Amino acid sequence: MYDPVIGELVEELGRFPGVGPKSAQRIAYWVLDADAEEIEQLAKVLVEVKRRVKFCKVCGNVADDDLCRICRDENRDPTMICVVEESKDVIAIERTREFAGRYHVLGGAISPIDGIGPDDLRIHELLPRLADGQVREVIIATDPNLEGEATATYLTRLLADFDLEVTRPASGLPVGGDLEYADEVTLGRAMAARRSSAGKAGVE
Amino acid sequence: MPSYNDEGVVLRTHKLGEADRIVTILTRGNGRVRAVVKGVRRVGSRFGASCEPLSHIDVQLYEGRNLDRMTQAVIRRSYGTELAGDYPDWTAAIALAEVAERLTPVEREANLQQYLLLIGALRAICDDRRDANLVLDAFVLRSMAVAGWSASFHDCARCGAAGPWRSFQLASGGSVCDACRQYGATTPRPQTVALLGALLSGDWDEATTAGPQVRSEASGLVAAFLQWHSERGLRSWPLVERAGSV
Image (cartoon, rainbow over all chains, first blue to last red; front, side, top):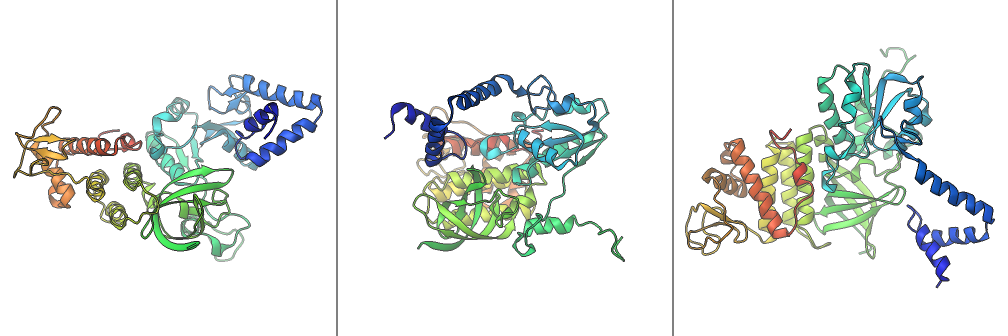
């Protein structure tokens, strides 16, 4: 259907996540129409990012050096560690600007049906970070799905012997949603974790 | 039937694209079906927890060429949420789901017995607080019996000679007499064979009296029995947390 060189480009682009054959074709024709310098710059960045980016030796986040930007930052609060599944979750939490501590990236969640157990994650790398007693709180921010919850349960049990507070982010209703469409589990958790509404008379 | 209603238990999920999932559901009336759930991974999805593994749901599906599409789901009971706080029980329940998927190889082929066995096993763990590992072993033995691989733990599995017999042979389907014993047969403890028989027949009074070593040996035989007949092991089985495994 395509000339071989274009066909190869469409096939390679089609391997990107979320890119189907139609999208791959559209991107391929955009590449053909674009300036040569623009495409050379894109290719250079792709090669460079693959060559330079590695994983932080301390937290497992993506980094361009031995330590990531957050682990290098001395202004971050060393008494709090937020445990997340993926590096993408670090970005999501950083966007909130509500957390000033450090992170620990597990590299996934426990999923027995996929053959992923605790030993396949960066759980054992977390324990030495807690050994010096500087960390006072570990926030387990795994995904609020079944694997994430079970991973949190496993970690909570593992950390029970350490003298620190283990917390989970609150779980409940999404902002902008309608209450009637919330499922029982989400609504149940939101009700169970309700908090006092400041400024209302009669509420503690 | 372009769209149909059913009830079922979510066995597993796979990510699809940016925000979708493919869910595998063991339904009451239509057997094992796979369906796409659009946008379920978004925070504001109306499907929410209904598509999590081990959720018992009422579901409306729209029949597709390859995969169905889930259009509505209401949770009857979220076994997964109940069990996620107990790691050993959760690992056993996930193994139940994998066994149920393995033993229903044909999609859209109604299998009411497997469905009822799965619901019964989940209730036995959540409501009756039975030992999840014993429930898992019992579920495997009974599901295999439903699938056509019933084991014999008393009479000889080959010639039917009245037992009990000491030898156990996977390929023959359980206990074998001295005449039928072949190379590769094992000789488990008599208490282990008794436990396996109790698990198959649902004699919980007998089953719960078994000690840890007997339970461990029985689990090993159950796993080997399943692997022999289904021709591959379960990925979740080695990750099931059993007493003394931590």
